[in-house]
Length: 146
Image 1 (cartoon, rainbow, N blue to C red):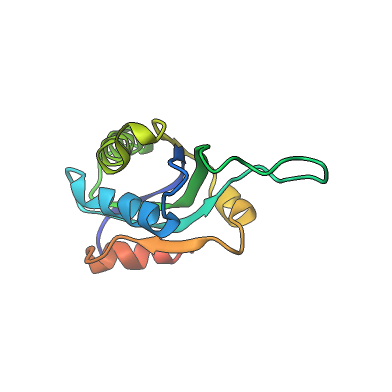
Image 2: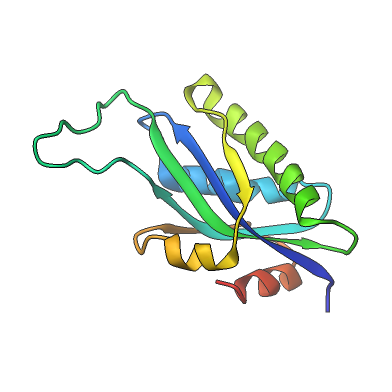
């Protein structure tokens, strides 16, 4: 059995209006491969657009769209704190979003959150994402939480 640390995560950012949600999810999932240790990210991505109430105008087609991911990052080994892992994944996500969307997206926020919040706050319509070709033991460890 592989020693691992599981960190529940929230990632949020504003994306260009023409951004593809699945593409955003794939971008996030791929960041696990850029970390300096084996990692696997699994979660769900969704839009957090403001609701349009009667009498209100819908969001303009040129406005940035608020996107989020709630999920779990599993990392191999011992000796790392959740704080260190979140700092590493934050750097990776900021770099990936900047290279993927350029100046068209806002700098993402990456937080460790409570595991319970993921189950309670993930919309049913969210799209599942995960890191492809990850270490099987990390996949098994993270999926136990999904």
